[in-house]
Every structure is written in C-alpha cells, then in structure tokens.
Length: 128
Image (tube, rainbow, N blue to C red):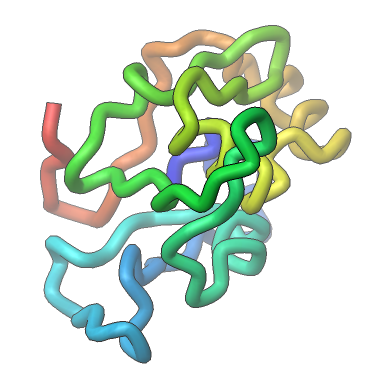
C-alpha cells in the first residue's frame, strides 16, 4: 500500500501481493485489484476497507493506490509518512506506518525522497 519502505530495507522479507479489497468483500485476484505491500502494511490492513481519521474522528475509506495519487494524500518527512487528507491520516494510523522501526528503516534506506515509488503490482501501472 506504499508505506515508502523500500524492498531493499528488508531484503530477507519479500513484499506481499495484497488485495486492495479483500476477497471476502468481493475483491478479486485480477491485477487491477492487487498491490505490493510490505509485510507490516499487509498485516495491519487485513480485510479493512475503512478506518477512522484521527483528526475528524470520522470513518473514511483507506487509500486505494489504483484510484488515488499517493502525493495527494501523503508526504514523507524525516522518515515519517504524514497523512494530508482524512484518507491519508486514517491509512497512516491503521497501517501503523510510523512505527519507530519502520521510520528507522526508511531513513537508513534513504527513502526520505518522495520520488521513490514502489510498483503496486508487477507489470501493472498505477494511476497518475
């Protein structure tokens, strides 16, 4: 789901092919419904489709890399992923994107550059 943790930061733990919408909620194995995710994002997301924006305390959908642009919802600052919108804040919170070890790995891998992108699924282009 693109927490900006480069695969090179965890070379012994491969990224997971994640269903953006879990199969139990009608998602499919079609490449358009899949995204690469680090093991932590995949574990924290689970089958969730929504979360609570910590600022507004409102239920909002999670970030969908097929329908939204990363830059519109997040920014990377000093190794931390910051949510700029309700969707971004809710996603950062639910996926625990700023756990200390994840921030440390981003910084060590030089992932504090917003141009670093992770493919959402092999051979598939995200919307820009």
